[in-house]
Every structure is written in C-alpha cells, then in structure tokens.
Image (cartoon, rainbow, N blue to C red; front, side):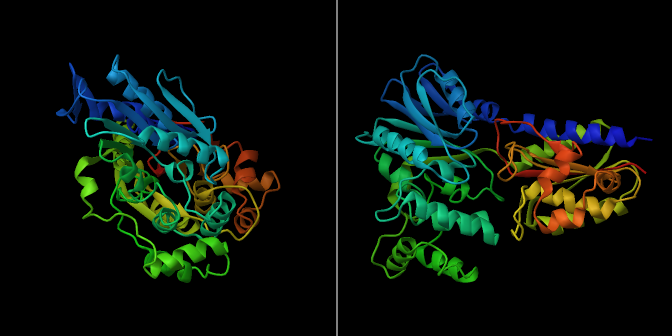
Length: 437
C-alpha cells in the first residue's frame, strides 16, 4: 500500500509530467517546420521563405521559449521581431528582441514594447509573413490603449475585475474594447501581410478571441457586452470615467467595434492552438497510470469559486476506491474578501485540506502551469490529511486563513508551497487528487 510520502512524491511527479507535455518550445516545434525554403505548418506548406520578409511578434508568459523555437526552425532565414514577456521570463534569442513588462497589471514597459511591435508591422506587403506567438498573459503584456484612456485607468479596471471574480472571458471582453491591438486589431495593423499565429491556450475551450484577448482573431464580443458585464458586477460607478465614456460611445454606435468574423482581413490570417490543458491532463494521466493509479479525468473546463471546487474535489477523494487519481484542469476564481496573500490554486487546496483532515492517505495538489499563482512566487500548493494537524502545531488557523484569503503564509509555514519558477508554458491550472486506501 502506498504511504503518504509516496502520494506526495507522486503528485509532484504527475504535475511535472504535465508541464513537460505542454512545454511551449516543443509545442512550436511540433507545429512549425521547414523543408528547404518552404515553411510548414502542421506539415503543410504555407510560405516561401525566399519571397518576402519574416517578422515575429507576440506576447505572453511563454513568449521567450516560443521565440527561441521559431528562430531555431527558421535557421539562417533573415528575420526581425519583438515579443513581450513577463519580468524574469527571458531566454536567449538572436534576432527577436524580448521586452519585459508587467503582469497581471500592465505597465509602461508593456506599452513601450507594444509600440515596438506596432512599428514592425507598419508598411508590410502581401509578400511578407508575420509569425505571432501568443500565450497566457498576453492581455496584460500587449497594450496600446484608445485615446483618452491611461495605463492607470486600465490598471484600475483590471483590479476591479479581478476583485469581483469576473471570468477571463469577461475581463478580456472589456480589455479588447479599450485597446487598439486586441480583438483582431493587431491583424488589422499587419495588413496586407500573411499572418500565422501560434497560440498556447490558457482559456477553457480555447476560444481564439479570448486567449491573450485575441489580437489576431475575429472578435465575438461587442461594446454592448461590455456594458452588460459592468452591470452584472455593479462596476459602472467603480471604473474610471474615461473607460466608461468610451464604452458608452461604442455602444451607441459612435465608434467602430472590433473586427468580426466576416471581416475580409481574416482571409490572410491562420490561428493555430499548439497546446492546451487537455495535453497537460493527458500526460498527467499517463504518468499516474504508470505509477499504479486508477485514473479519472473529471474535466478540463473547471471553473467557479476556488473554495467550492476544493471542497468538491475533496469529497470525490473521500469516496474514491484504492489507489486512485482524480485529475482536473481549468480556471477557478477567487472572490477577494480579506487582505491576505495567495492565489486561486492555493485557496483551492486550503479549502480541500479542511475537508480531508484526519482521513487516510489523501493528497490534493493544485497549481498554475505557468508557475505563478496569483501575485505570488508559488505555482500552487499541496495538502494532505495531516495538513490541519501540522498547521495547528504551528498555531495556524485554516478558517482564518480562508477568510483573509491568506493561503500563502499558511502553506509557506508548512513547507507545502509548490514552487517551480517560470515553466515555459501556460495552459490553465492542473488539479491532482491522489488516494491510497
């Protein structure tokens, strides 16, 4: 019978197997190839490299290894490029310049980096090719705001949306409508060049117009949708006045909306999902089976309040037979009520810890595949049936930690944070529940 130590070790190994499978560098190399002077996408010819210029642009937490992979594939082909990444997510590149900027709150460096991208897209021709590498985090890292809206306004809007528990769909709907590059508008800037976007999905179901706010994809949302979201969360009086004024003008038809699916510009755009949460979950399942577990993948589209999801996963574990592995992927949310430090994955695990206390051999791990959970240096956390007893020995109170959204110091004290550093991928969160009975 597996011991608790075995379960804890297995949970971490299963998580790392998922990270390896979703590695962004490898994902680019699986999708993009070269046969002489012909560039291939999924083994099909797409571009004659002797015909025109190649420009590489993009944004996201996984942008650096994606840019590296493009350079390796193109080899000696002349190219220029600019890709924006989160601070401390750099990697060596030869021709593509990497710019560091703020995430999840955008900053001035991100705005400057976007201008560098915009300049590269000016004056392109039909014979040119733009390769766009996009991954989660791109919404914050790629920004050129509409006239009259400042970065401080955008940061204030983002903070209100995060605080109220808005979904990534809702957050990005608003972001797209105060931007000049999101919601298909980067593709508009690159006309008439051919565009190939390689996309690492961090959004449930991988909708192209939501990942990184869809800079190269047709937009399915409108100004009217923005006003509905503000009403839903009672945000009209809380967001900056210039943003509200802009959205209301758009809803009245005084401003053009983002380009929709019938816009002819998209006939020269190819968007390809190169990795997602399903790939990560499948690899985790393979690793778990190799370690002797019966595996169930609950869903790769988990969403909802992190605390409730933690409770539900714990209840599954309590009913599980034998050596069992429950896997799930998705994007829980946290409604902030306290002033503590943590993230959605840590809060999920803290909630589960309360439910499995005193039971036999149960481990729950939840972590962000990008290596970052909320505004912390942890990817997530791990708990087992002894977590509450160990916490009490250190004078920690699980209920107080939950009420204050203060999971980070709780797990830090117990040495149960999952810390990976930058992971070269970003395909939502992975949740792992292991039992041995």
